[in-house]
Amino acid sequence: MLQIGTPIPTPLTSLQVTAAEGPDGAVFLAAQSPGSASPSVVYVVDGNGPTAVAEHFPSGVAALAASADSLYVATYSTVTAFSRVSGNQSAQWTLPPVNAANSSDADLVAMTAAAGHVFVSISQGNMVSVYSINPSSAAAPVLAAQGLSAAVGMNGTIYYEAADHHLTSLSSSGTSIEGPTLADAPNGEGGGVQYVTSVAGGAVWVGDPAGQGEDTQWTTYDASSLQQIDQFSGNLSEMLADTSGGALMIASPGSLNPCTTASPGTVDWCLSRVSNSGQQTDSQTGFSAIDLVGPDPVLIATLPGASQVEVWRVT
Image (tube, rainbow, N blue to C red):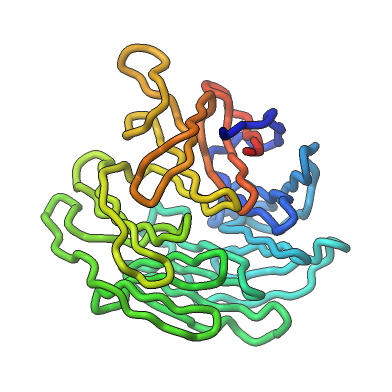
């Protein structure tokens, strides 16, 4: 049975938060404000707290990632590495230009540390470009894959929709697999197009928005073979995390979730185990979710009606 631990308070009050977890379970988080020129603070929760300052950063933060020895901070122009032992800056790489004009998406840059590399995903228009950084080299980020949507697994495999709409995987060793063709038939209402969204529980999760509201049709594919596993209804605002205990999902209020209603006509946020066929079990509630990270599951949330961001460990 899933158990949510005692909330660990942080100084953050913004609902726009970027978070990452290191292999040792240390959780790093910061206000997500990539367009800001004001200094930022990256906080860390080690074990069960308390929250401490990990780094002072000179500008707004777009994304975070963490390895066993380094913290990585991304902006719209650079990725900076800091030693987790000394706290000193150890390296910095320049990213390709990120155009934030006419965009309300705070997630134009995403970042994952896996398989000894740092992967930076940059979304521009209809394309997602995934760059690989070798932390031990000063060499510029290398374009590893480019497609219409993409996600990076914990083992460093990149899953993306190629220009010809095939679901494709590229392993950290360079092995590529071409899977089935994803839907690309826009219906005029925002639906009819599939997007690679997440990798969790040994499956690639691909969503097809219904085009009205936030409903979506999920399709799961085996992460090794790219063969379809199942297809089921859900909600685009659902959050997935790949954890040491399998795939976990947060279902938002108003979406399909098994948590009991707090009162007639309302539905709570819901944290559950989720199968690759969409079955949610061991459900827990009592929070307003912001993010969900792994491999040791951690919920970033607030108490209902509150503004203080807290870290909740899940066992």
